[in-house]
Image (cartoon, rainbow, N blue to C red; front, side, top):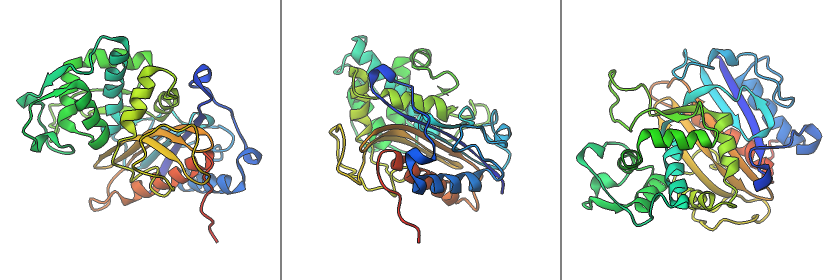
Length: 328
């Protein structure tokens, strides 16, 4: 099975430098990190050599404009400004696309166009199977912030549909564009199942745009503090941070963490043939990242996608100051 990899790494350097980063090389990040990155590159893109130099992977064109793909595993890893290889490949996002809905709510609250105690009634048409809790709860009226917490913490599909209906898809699209999310977009409400007559996906996007978005979440502006607070409640840490020491119950946004550990605020997406994770790691440095993996399942098993994303997580955490495990 041939695969392509897309990697772009940004380290957020404060509000004035949001979306910018410093290109680093072997001597800056250490041999252990480089060896791990080189392993990922060789595995994902045979013959490619651009991981440490910022060149694009030669096989990237195979998946650039095809979210469904042609039977290849495709991985996009972005932590902006450090490393850039095909970070514009458009891939399926699954529930990581819900970040765009959450950003629309957070920015509306900060601007005063939405009120935190504003009540939204969950309608019959909003209910959908899959992840979440609203389908088994009796309450039908929730504040807009309650729904946002449900989306961020347990990826509630019904809460997502209620918020998306309340805001409107056009508003979510417009707010996303203001944040630089152009090719990254929500296409439709959440549907289970998704029929041939429906839009093909809930959301698609690029690792580069999503990582730059994550780098904006520095806690300086009110809406970014709100987003980080919601994302810190995410109960799914099975992808990027899975192999890295962290406290999954830590909600307070730190300036830095104890050596060898990280703080995590993230949003994952899981669907058949899709594993995605977008968020912020705080260690000795603050890192905004996006890892998108699309590919075929083998007997209904997405283990290979999970493995690739977790390995990428180890490399990204190294940028935040967590040493890579020693491989003897």
